[in-house]
Length: 336
Image (cartoon, rainbow, N blue to C red; front, side):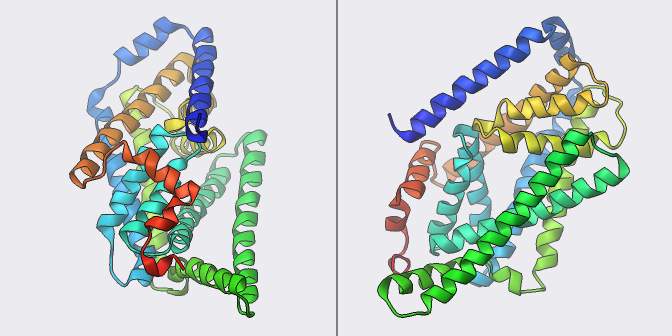
């Protein structure tokens, strides 16, 4: 049994057990009634907003890649996002992010180190706006103590991880300057890694990157708000950012395929803060997840099929990324 197959089986078992526990405590008749009352004129906008968000995220990545490849690769950025989505929906532990890095490296004929650091900068920009949103939300609507503690811990770990990455890059650069084959290899990889962060040295690009991140989070919030309307939930304004924040904490802690389980529990927990019945909250969470993921997965499969990339290629791409096979697929000048 391969490690990828074992991860899939383990994730599936966890999802089945989690939903079995939740459903054992739910009134299934209330769940059925909640689904039957969905207002589809609101719900159908969710997949549209999801595709729009994917385009905005692709735009952000294209801006980040611009100083490296000296052109605006919006097409390949969009394709790489779709590959990442398909990977994260069909595989556990966010292996789709690795597939995305591999696709960018291969399609743009750049080193894997540069691709990974560019995507790391993409995530950093995303997280900066996320933690800013948490801070602003906490001012307007104080979180429960447990959520505040979790947010502070996550923010501290994020800052520590970013600092460690840049510190290691600086150390690697100094070590690589000295003579020796191994140190020369270190220097090349560190330089490739720093190339992926070139956008940080261009002050004209940073505002565009952050604006894309802000717009991306607004689109995600809009999906949650539209589903509130679809379920006839008359909730205060702050319910939207709080649900968005807790949902992202939930999917970060439980990295199952398509974020199944963690997504639903986080959404239910958020809505219970606003006195929404458990059955209605659970129905809302399932509906939002299905409407968000299923049409997007179909769109990804169809769009990439026209681009010559098939769904069965995703596991192969992940294996190449994490088994060293990616190096063999990159351009000759990048294998050094």
